[in-house]
Image (cartoon, rainbow, N blue to C red; front, side, top):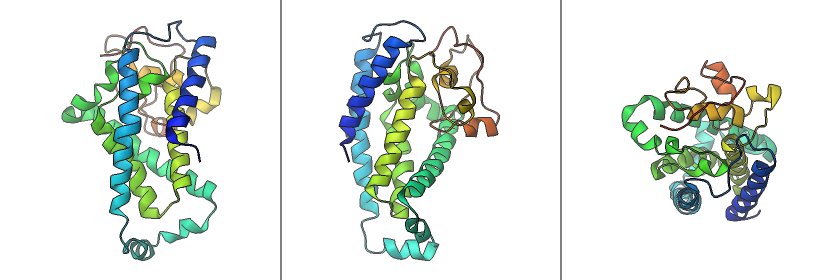
Length: 234
């Protein structure tokens, strides 16, 4: 299992190259706000994310946890293949994060933290990391709490984090790709760019998907027109 930092580096190289070949809008690598987003990426991914993982894992280090799983009847998942455990964790985690994201937009006090993410006016894959550290606490807790409660292996948890991060980079990327019918399942650049639309350039509070776009289509918050908005940010 490669270190998460190595995965982030490889992912960054891939999406940086892809954005040069298939850009939605031609823009330099070192675009406006690039240095700030690098700082956010290092802090949120490596420092804050690691601290949350250690904290949540510590909550479940006691000897009583296996008894909790048995009493709640949740040991059955561990008897299934790791790919099914991974899929189950991804779906549960993503639905919970969709609900958190919805609340970040609808509760004024929470929006004060979340608007940091929407402050970007030039978006690419690195914009995925521009957010307040409290969002790291919330989103990472939503990942690690179910994983530790269910007793899932580090490989399953790591795999879930890799998939979520990759889709997050893809959705924020400056790419002109359109993914056809897959837009009903996976968050994508054509969909997520409209989540960042400026108040004067399009409808607000749409496309809350983190990884799985299905939730937005189910709850009628999806909005995917033919082209990108003329302006993003707040």
